[in-house]
Image (cartoon, rainbow, N blue to C red; front, side, top):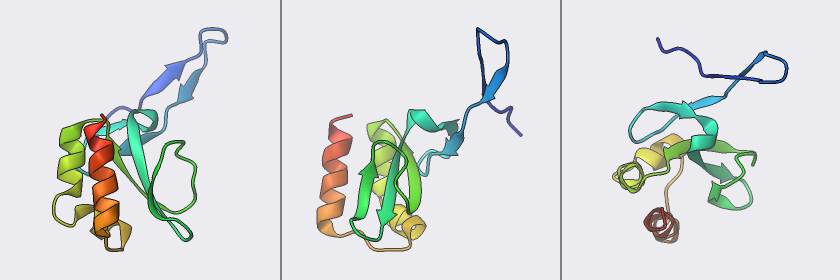
Length: 100
């Protein structure tokens, strides 16, 4: 069991809970803000959620090319999203990964 991350507020001395999520490729638990969210929406299909607030089924990947390659390999992302990636979706995600 891992210790949950907390952030200490310097002004008040209180601690604030930091949301954590698991990368689907490397299975490491990291702070939510350190990961990229991919979400399946009703209207737009599967998209990269830069803000992390879009409604829909989501999955998280680290901000590394290796995790994106592993996450897109096979059908891991498709299985978690309960859908099939189109060639256009896969290409868009691969282009995003190259920019990391």
